[in-house]
Length: 112
Image (cartoon, rainbow, N blue to C red; front, side, top):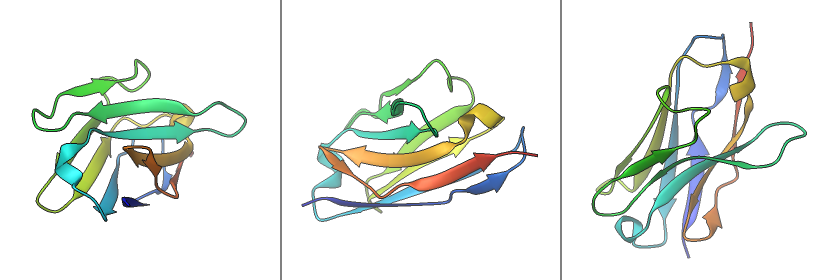
């Protein structure tokens, strides 16, 4: 069973950057597409970015396109989300997901 553990969240000022990491274990990581979701306080969960297996094709939500970059390292079983030009509306708990498995989330707060 795949287990996912996120890290890298924290408090950052508007315009700043953060890099989230997700460590995967318990499965064949390279066989699956991986995604980042987020949930802001009082809002529905949102799909932020997805990266496919094998060809590493990426898809982003319109709200983060051009600012966030998803990547993966199948040797290290790691998924990343580089977040630049952060805005207060990016404040949320960010979740790593794959094959139906979810991590526990890491909180990102964008505030001055």
